[in-house]
Image (cartoon, rainbow, N blue to C red; front, side):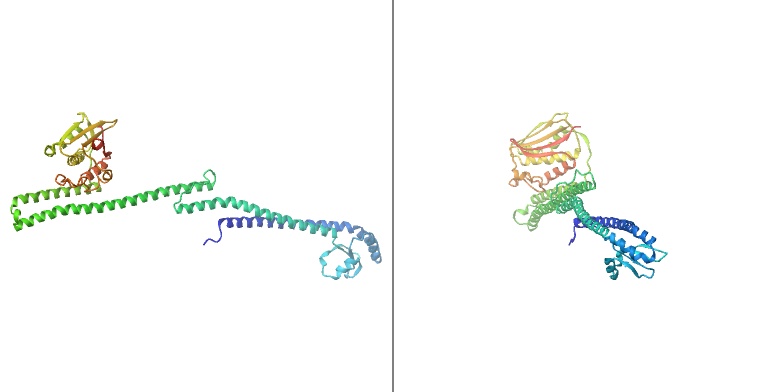
Amino acid sequence: MRKNGIFFKIFSYTVVAMLFLVLVTAGLFFNQFSTLYKSVERRSIYESYQPLVNEITRSKVEAVSQTAQEFYQKNRSFEFMITDKNGDTLFSTPKAEELSLSTQKDFFFVVDKDERSGNSIIALTRPTLTKFYQEMIIRGLLIFLFIVSLCLVIGYIFTKQIADPIKSLAKDTKKMSNLQEVQPRFSDRKDELGDLSRDVHSMYSELKETIAHQQDEILREQEIEATQRYFFSAASHELKTPIAATSILLEGMLANIGDYKDHPKYLRECLNLMDRQSELVSEILEIVKLNEGKVLFTSERIDLLEIVKATLSAYQSQIHTAKQKIEIAIPSDSMVTTDQNILKKVLSNIIANALQNSPEEALIRIWTEGKVDSYRLNILNTESYIAPETLTKIFDPFYKVDKARTDRNTRSGLGLTIVQKMLDELNLSFSLENTSEGVQFSIDLPKA
């Protein structure tokens, strides 16, 4: 638990430093003042008692007391005493006599000592000078207290100016640690606090971006894991169904039960199921290769009309059976640059889905729209519609739009998943949407 904050520490250090300087200055001042006072006091006492010294020097030894008495009569404010060489008192004023009997010896000052007679004049400190000295001491104490108070005020203001920005930054960093929104502070300051504030908010912005990126990565990983679980679950179901059907057929043929005695018929059915199984496995492996980036892409000049016609030729029997019509409106000089094999697979899956999800005698239109640097290839299966909630799932693995057409829809549900991954790998933009005429798939292909 924090006991003392930054304000208390800075204030304490500042005040202690200032008081130390004040005490040192006051000590030096007091020493100089004491020396000056003693010098003035000594000079004043010498000057005051010089007439007495002169008279005693001129007078006889026996007349010292008389001379001192006459001097005292003229100067009643002076307190002094005269002693002989043995320390005996020859003359003393009343107050000096009283003080001589006490312990206050510091009040006496030897003004003169006659080497001829051995007599000494000892003067009491002048009261006026003592009072002046005391007044100066009191004034010095008052000034000292004023300076101390001023130091406290200045220390408080100085500390507040330094500590408040630091405390504000500390509060901001506390909020930042909780990922709360914090407005920049002191961005207009040109000192180190301004630099610190800008650096802290810059790091905070980068931290938020990093955290947001990591959260996106976590969500992406979770989505990938969920997609993988769904994919494997659906793949297991799709693989298990034809295996179970094939097992039933084989068991029936082995038991020669009823119609299963017609082995050639049901062997062909088993072969068809195995072909569908082989196709499904191939599509799963292709998706795995796309996810792992093992599919190599090449870029080459392609005649778009020729690719579309070549792809449609594989579905002529299906188109004839369903009595569907194909309408192509692609200029003969529509040249694009992309991977030819991948584009064939993409168009094959899109056209197959369009044929299977269009009613009989429906019209399927294929045309291009020229742009500045690309062609938009559109494939429209008329008289079709995809529910809005289905559009978000249409590219999911094993998802089938029309589950009711089980007799015609023999595909695995991986076609559009493969299309999406291939177009993403080629960095080609595409869209699938409902229009007034039907469902339209569009791809933007770069011009050659």
